Length: 338
Image 1: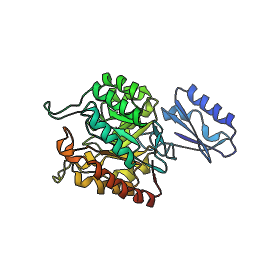
Image 2: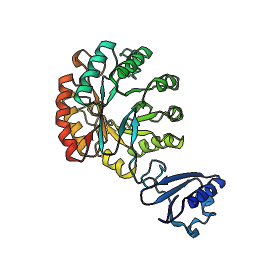
Image 3: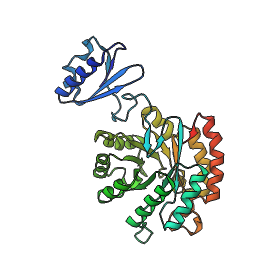
Image 4: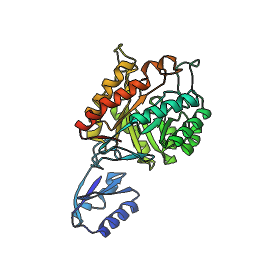
């Protein structure tokens, strides 16, 4: 339930109501806004009804949260959330560009790419240390060695970093070193991993599953917030369809759909979302135009020689060209590059 207090309600009224909600065994939420103080109560609505909050002189209205996802819903928190990866804010008026190789191959190539993407305007360095692969014969990353390379490179260049965790066992090692942890598409519904990631307190970049609906993505995010971690960023990364012109179909309709229903920031991954290098730039510009809060882009010094993701990776010059195209589009929709 959402409890909206009257404009003149004193702070003591909110504290009293929160205490009464908690006494009933419900989960209280306190969300002071610029114009109204909003309280939330999660749990059995029949128990909440016993409090008869509508008759409280400081309460303006009481209404149910209709969405199945409560904590990520804009009904509960109407203002946009801004989630920080290191010093970089994702959401609000900025547009974040997170770039780097699909898989970390060695220190030299990562440093070269990191310097290139930073110089072009990227704010966060991404790189896969642990990579999920459909084939057991494909390159699965350098593991902890790759993680060390990523952390050292980010620190040397003053860039926050992002990499993916595939298991709870990897999570502790990643969270100890990383500014943010990614939960990939194949693990969107790995609920033990979601709970463990939430408990870590790290910023979490959650990708939509390959066959997941938007509602399923939001419910996966609900797990994270329910565990007490609201540092969550959603990612539209394309879904599988009957179409064969690309490995996935990038669903940009999901961006404004999510933004209308949730306060969480939304990124777009045009690299994995299309799987084709020539589609990355136009879909990045389209992502900025349709309201996304940023993008994840694969960049490699020599995509033709990449051990993973080469078909979807931009080379350094291609990335620089894209960033020059992106800036005026972001400005046209009231955004500045983070």
